[in-house]
Structures are given as C-alpha cells and as structure tokens.
Length: 205
View 1: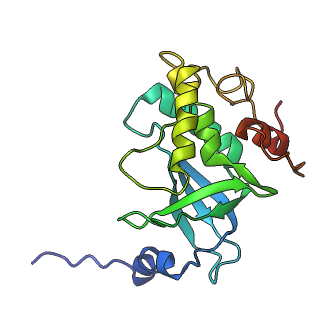
View 2 (view 1 turned 90 degrees about the vertical axis):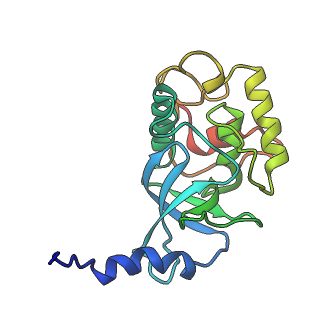
C-alpha cells in the first residue's frame, strides 16, 4: 500500500485563498522578491492578512525570463532587483484581467511617491521588454509605441547581442541600469518620459 502524503492545510489555503480575498484597488505593496524581470513577489500591508505574499506579473510587459535568452534575462532581472527589491511601490489594476489562469496577479507598478511614474512603461521605453500581442490591456496602445521607439533606437535588449552589465549605462541613455532607489521622491512634471520620472524618484548614481 502506498504511503499517504499529507499536504499541510495551511499551505493549501495560502495559495488558494489570498487572490480571491485581495481587494483590487490602487494600494501600496512591498516587493519582497524578484523572480525575473517581469515576475515579482508582493506583500500588501493594507490587506486583511498582511503576511500573505503574492506572485505577480507586470501587465502589458513581457521580459526575458528563466530558460530564455540567458544574458538578457540576467540583465533585466538585475535591473528589477536594483529598482524594486525590498521597496514599497504603488500598485494599480487593469480593467481586463487581474490575475493569470494559475493565480498570479497582473499589476501596473508605479513609484510609491509618484503614481504617474509607470514602471511597466519604463521597461518598454528603455528596451527591457516587449508588449505581448495576444492579451488586451488598457495601456497597450501607448506601450506598443514605447516598444517601437526602443526598437528603433536600439535600446536595451534591442541594442546588440547582449546589453551592458548593470552599472555601465545611465538612465535615459540606453538601458537604465544605474539606479539605486532613495527617498523621498521629488514629483516629476507631467509629460516627462518614464526614464526621467523614475530617475527623479529613484535617483541615478
């Protein structure tokens, strides 16, 4: 007779319940983990149970991940870690889908202190990813234009066999990897490109 493997009930509940219980409203989240360039682990301090961590993907953005173009994947993941890990961000939601079929959240990420500083747009503007064509998104038309411009100027992953290592390029002059976030944020002006918004908020060194 085969042994019975019992899975702890609390572990099952931790993955089965949180997504349904989370309120889909704009709110602050802490980035507790970076899986790859467009996959994060978030904790919501204002949630009913603020101990729960959620896997999340960026809406309207796809970036090289595990098992794909390894050089580019390392590059974009390093940027995400430097910008986001262990920091608080502002989360907004799309009107189409708010989670994937396997339960991951789909989120727009903005700077905590400047909600107009759209990280998803920054990825595309700097050439760190592309727009998935098969899925709808409220900001898709704008994102496609940002991707087109990044391709035309050879930014980020569009600029050669592999982007430079983080620390070798200044934000707004190719891949924006020279970023060490620090607060407080000085609000940027409406109409500034996303690179300037995040440079103003996060600081470039």
